[in-house]
Image 1 (spheres, helix red, strand yellow):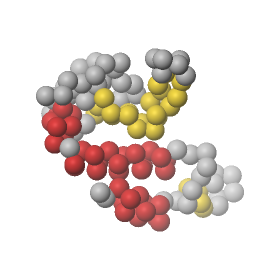
Image 2: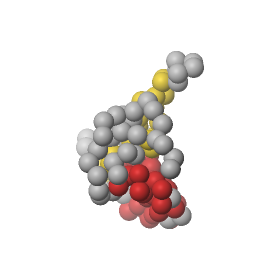
Image 3: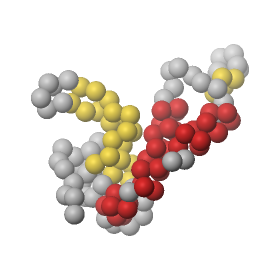
Length: 112
């Protein structure tokens, strides 16, 4: 698991410059760059630990999304998921790494 270490290293070097005053901050409460970065590192760890998921990603049957809208089928409540992994809404080309999408399909991926 490298995500915590990589994120701590990233946090120690990341700088956000205030456009108006030029101040430099390590964290900006209205930016989601921290969440996006952490989710990316977590995804890397998951892929490193799960050969089946890597295979499904290479086949184009699994993708990931960050800040994915989700509505519960039972309650109708809407949420935004920081990180979601699942089938893409349309088939993806084979090969390469896992693809990032803006939404996921409403179906399950077969577990071989």
